[in-house]
Image (cartoon, rainbow, N blue to C red):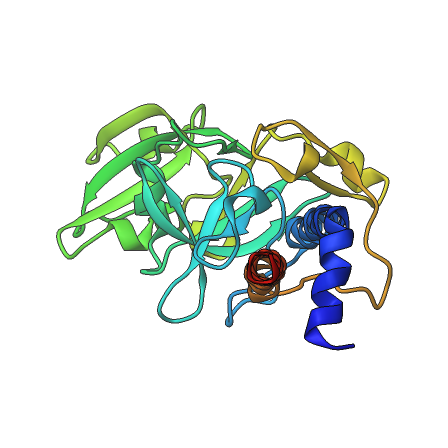
Length: 283
């Protein structure tokens, strides 16, 4: 087909250009919507951890915000470990995440979680402590002959002072008259402060509530893949599907398709200009 014949075709059927563009736009938004769906359902990992990171959590700088719920942003540190930043308590390393029975377990990079628990502040975060226990805290001179040395929290003690922690209501205190009570009814998010580095800090959340979806072995995500904080359940992608597509694919689709449409539009307009010039030249 010669260029003149092609120009004549477009001149006689100009609406075909616009119909073509219209249907390509529909195709574009359909593909983009499906790609966003895959992103919402995608799982990410930090190199040193094997547990999946998915809704309501998301990885900063690796997944878009609509992959997770506000306040559930995680990141990979320079060593490749998963990190959660609590607004008033700083960064904790993530040991594991459970989705069916909501729990995120944290630990301290410096192996003194007990010190972090003494100052733990969960306000302005979506999390709450899995358990709260009231302790009595004793401070004893290091040379004092302790009857219950098993209660000493090693990482909170030093060469001059031993710090002991035991449940409120215990009678240990009366056996150590040479020690000072530092705190009573001190609420700490740990069943065993002394061995908190071993057991970790367990936090849970009630919003968003994805337990219904998890019970049905479905996935949880934002309604219409937006960030309006309305969530619903989605069926899991079939085995072998493109679950976990990289963000680069969505970016490529978002860029390549509009450019193709633009080129098509320019081509159509160029043909119209060519036709007009031919008509003017022949008149």
